[in-house]
Amino acid sequence: MQSINLPSKPPSSPHPILNLSFRIFFSGAALFAIITMALWAFVFTGHTDIEAQVLNPLYWHGHEMIYGYALAVVAGFLLTAVKTWTGVMMPHGYKLLAIFTCWLLARLSWFAFGLGMTVSGSSVPLLHAAAIFDLLFIGSMAFVIFRAVWQVKQYKQMGILAKLALLTLGNGWCYWGIVNADMSMTRVGIYLGFYLIIGLVLTIGRRVVPFFIERGLSVTNAEGVKEIVTLRNSKVQDIASLLFFLAFFIVDLFYPNKYLLTVTALGVAVVNIVRLKGWYHRGIWQKPLLWSLYIAFLGMCLSFLLYALQPWLGYAHSIAMHGLAIAGVGMMTVAMMTRVSLGHTGRSIHKPPKTVNMMYILMVLVFMSRVLLPLADMSHYLLWIMIAQGAWIACFVLFCISYLSMLARPRPDGLFG
Image 1: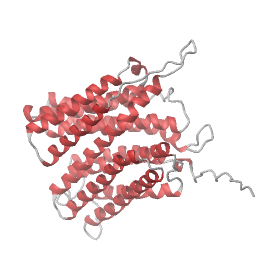
Image 2 (image 1 turned 30 degrees about the horizontal axis):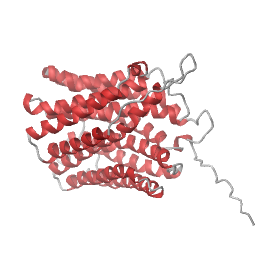
Image 3 (image 1 turned 135 degrees about the vertical axis):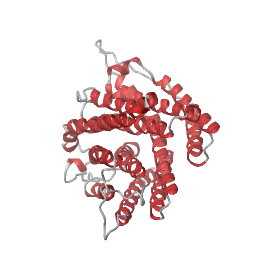
Image 4 (image 1 turned 45 degrees about the horizontal axis):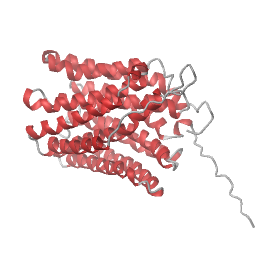
């Protein structure tokens, strides 16, 4: 007797924002970017009761930018992209909500610590709670990605999983340093997380930036002819970028030597400048969703040049680090979120909200004010910091105004996603 395979039940969730991870994590990351930067402005100027003996306020800021904001965007992107790469359905509905809730509870614990709140007279239990929820968040995200990759034997994605495993280690290392009052260990955990995020950006950016440019510029002209744009990529460049970057972050984090730092940082910069040249097409300047990605990558290259020059010109190491953070974490994630949110909600990537240009310009202003202006004039350093903080907040306020309703509504075509 012939068996009939009935179609499986289509996926569903209690609310559209829980359909796929990019919806809830991009929304959460954008709101978090506003609130945490506003709180950091108060912490930075000494207007909160944060326990500096437990945790250096600079590390509070660094941890939440990396393991809070950046990892939320990574989760939103990866848990959506892996579905496309593998064809395996990623968590949605209440399962997705559980993963997001772990991230949210960890952030609330860090907020409470930053505001100087205590439990039984101590702020340490707040960080213990944050550690539990943070590690649950990263661990559950890594597990569902590993399960999907293993199911379809797509082993080429193991590099991303390795970075997630190291991010879990880095965050655990950071918390262990806090518990043991070892600031140097905490610093290593934060910087390890930062450089792993930059490594992820370089890895994922290598795939998606040329793909987005090709898709964005390959359109049908007025004569009805499909104009195909093909960008140059090189396996040699990929390997060289990976090796130089691996050497760079080991040197900068574990073996500070100005000669090695200059050589490795310069190597990363040169390889990726050559890569950017192969990705260039004059048509990107007509498409804000494309030039933003290009400028973000260019900002990363400039930041690696700043790392290479820093030992010889004597400016603060944090200037180069913030350049890399703003370009590679700030602008790159904003550019990705504005593009991915359109495509995966069934909207045209060729008709983004009119506010996107201003968002990208504001993020460029963040880079200029936090990185370039202090190089030219340190006497107004506090002013430059305040301008950068204000521009960052304004950028994400515009994102929330333009995208939150889009992320919370069903797709116009009625599909699940």
